[in-house]
Image (cartoon, rainbow, N blue to C red; front, side, top):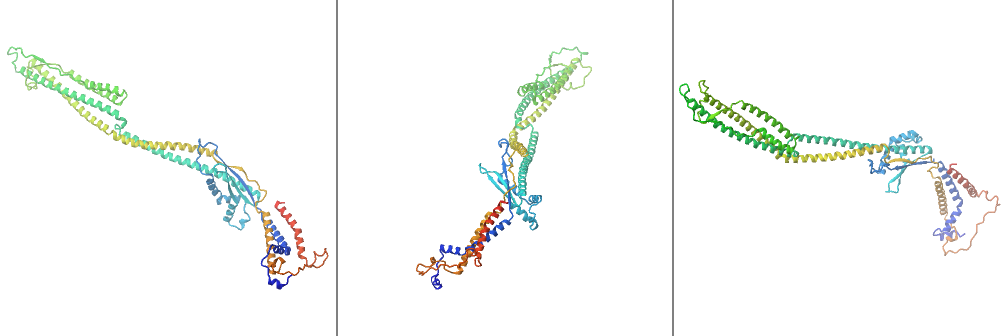
Length: 563
């Protein structure tokens, strides 16, 4: 070995690979002891860690059985969103607390932890994973897992949570479908109420403006034409009546003059009667005018040809004709009771005609006076007829004016009706649309109740796990073994650095002169006693460790298999 002075004068610049190997070889026993000790401790700790079992159940997203083009579903939310909502409901405190109480979970933890901490611990032990399908990247299934210490309890809890997901999904879909159906039903009732109010408003408008509606324009025009014809006929009748009255007035004047002349002649008892050379002229009959009933019958024929027998105006005209005929019959009876007389041509004053009859008058005077009285009666009847027809004419004028006003206001009513009917058409379209949606919503809700829509179905229920998912004892053992080996090497390197010795000639600089190599001389002992000699305790530990390593490995393998 080189002298200490030489070692201090030329210290090694760095450790080479041979130096590292040399240090490992020099401290092989201590490294082996540390390695075996830490490995054994790691194996013991891993054995003490309680195993955790995980059970998983697969839930299949079963699509709708009925084609959507026939019965569209009311629940169109994405499965991922719906699953998130259902997860929040299932993982609520009340639901999880019931599961914990039913299966007596976390009995040891409940002695030292608060209830909220236990709920959060269970939430961490529950996992939900989506399985993406091959179409549109939509989830075709998802998995629900639960981790715990007891395999049978883990499987039961997983199946319970799986059933909760299926029931909650079914209830959520039914509630959403029924809520949609109820909302549409409520909207339909409101629409029906508004439509009924609109129809009542239309009926009230029609009643309030009856006779001024656009669809009555043809009837109003026909009635107006009929009234105008009746008005013209009535005017002609008044003109004829006034002409007749004028003729009768002239005839009456002539009759009165004749009576006065006859009254002034001497009586036949005193003088011989002289034949009156004045011819007695017959009272000219007034020109015959058309009766009111005849005028109305002509108008009735025209109305029947244009409107038909069932029209209200035709029926009203029939009633008017019956009244006119009754009035004319009474007038004819009165005229028939008046005797027809002849009137003389000379005109006399009417003073004598109006005087009271004298019993001593001659017969011709009496006849003349009776003739004059009959003419006065005819004139009175004609005057009565003129007054009646003038009243009818005034009534006809008012009626014609009224119907003309109705005809003039029809465009205004047409605009108002158009606005009302537009609103009614819009409400009717909304009502029919809601009626169709309500029918579809009821069918869809019934489909949800019969479970023919999209639903969650258990594809693979949770089974009792046979192998724990944690802890991973082989990985822990391997990590502990690696840590022990590295720690032993670090301790050996640290001790070697503290010694500060030269491990070999390769650590000297190339310029260093090596005089000789002195080999290490060990004391001479027998082969049997050298291993167990007092100075060889490290060898004994190494041999014992080498013997224990297979035993520890076999025990770890049996524990890993659960034997």
